[in-house]
Image (cartoon, rainbow, N blue to C red; front, side, top):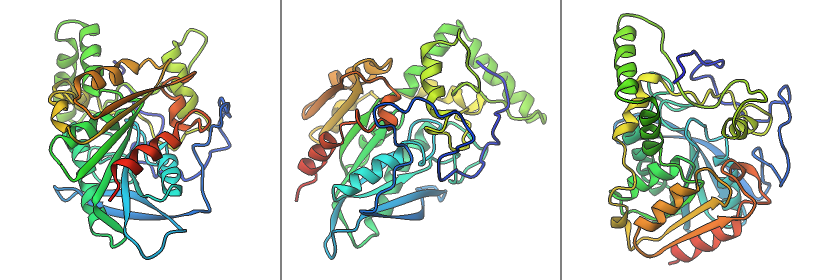
Length: 336
């Protein structure tokens, strides 16, 4: 595990548009993370979670629908990302189909509240989806009985966790699902013995004595010819014009160990009869998470493998992302 300070300051304000000072990145297959639409309105909003913490979000509404209540979708960003990285894109596209959508920054990240910055808190991350639903129920234009969730990357696992305890969330689609608990346990096993938890415990003692916060994991700041495909794929989104938004993606080292106790797929079958849709790239290193979730879930459920797509491809490559499939899923399952 890394023990380093992020290049970007933790908690730095979110960037709202493409940073043209960075390398362009791979722009194939319709990369469009910074997509904006003249068919929808975007409003910055703030709402509170169950514990009184403020979350920052963007509310998207279709312009061509007036005077009626609409179904709504909560959209969660990838782990360590902010709403300006993939979530806004999905929220905008789904609003074009006629949904009210809400993308948000997780607590401890971006413009949302929480100290220390960049802390991992899987239970609070899961709660954020219910908090977003709380907010949506206060809007006159939203039908309270037709609220669903779209979770990208690790947000899918946090959303699964919350659907088990909040039946207001009527359907869930995940894209490039990543089970962060399984990821952390894999790192623990690779380190061997108690090395991971020992490190976190020891760093807690040092930080209690005044040492600066240590960070771990996340997207590398630099890559070279020897970097693995995993690092290169994430670097090309988070460290280039494609998706860089002044966020480090590096969680605090001490809090990362909390993921070892996070088992999002435990009891996933209890979500039924609410429908689940798992979308993943056929070439994604994370495909196994979607397959595992699909196999453990009860009907109704569906697994869609996107041809010629990897994990990060489905963050912003609009020629690969099956938006029409998502529209069909939510339209069917949020019907009156």
